[in-house]
Amino acid sequence: MQEAAKYKGVNMIKKYKNLVLICCFFSICVVGLGAYTRLSDAGLGCPDWPGCYGFLTVPHHEIHSEVLSENFPGMVLETAKAWKEMIHRYFAGALGVLILVIAIGALLLNKRNIVPTRLPWFLVVLVIFQAALGMLTVTMQLQPLIVMGHLLGGFAIFSLTGLLYLRLCSKPIPGGDEGARPQYFATILALIVLLVQIALGGWLAANYAASHCADFPLCGPESMQHFSLWEVFQLPMSQSNYEYGVLSYEARMSIHLLHRFWAAITTIIILWALYRIWIHSYSSKIKQCVLTVLCALIAQLTLGVVLVLLQFPISVALAHNLMAAALLLSVIRLSYYIKVHS
Image (cartoon, rainbow, N blue to C red; front, side, top):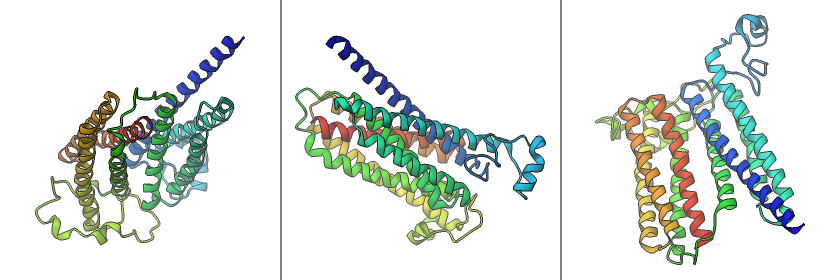
């Protein structure tokens, strides 16, 4: 009887882990679809929320033309853009349902004290907040602060679902790693600097500033003369529509330049942290995590350079977004192993 109960418990945990893994997959899909929607200028493909022109799916222009002209006067239905936006919403909705199921499952399994409960329910709260930001993104016509917040929320959900999976699946490092433990602060510093860089990338994307710096490594021979931190952090004036950006050319160029400058700082700090961890740790697990972060960092830098040299193709820009998420998760994974298993 006890063996049967033990087997049942192990099987339930295995299914729960698989569900969390599926949730991780959905979260990175939502990040990618959100980036693709933004990069293809489809963020206002549906001017209302959560439906599209009052329908649960993209309406057929010929069939619903009277309804569209009556309820959304002056709006032109672009079916391709609308479907990009709605597919993103469908995946985001499915992700929200999955996270709720995971949170409820954590409560049921917590009777055995074998799964964390606070993190899944924090994810539920985060999803609700993210849904509110998604609504505001549309209703406030792509206001840059809201767009940046929505992007960061997607990264946060992906990172935390990945962290939840790590907590469920990671095994203690045999004997620990006393050499790596003092380097925990270095990984936290690298994580903070990386988060700032991702936020700057979100600010750049929200203000449509990518194409305003099409040279490398700077934006042109006189770009530094027009660079201004004040221009970078100024809030766009109130507009009825922020699509395609409203800031001046100089402001957007400054935003892009700062993103590049901070990328250099981020690279130096991450490499410094990885070097310290590598020379002080003796666990193969920790060293494997270091190599993962290094590979993700090199890939992200390469994609950033290629993105500029090829004049910002959507495919490379999308890969740059996804690799930023992978780099973030790899740094979180390294920090987690040093904190918990050393």
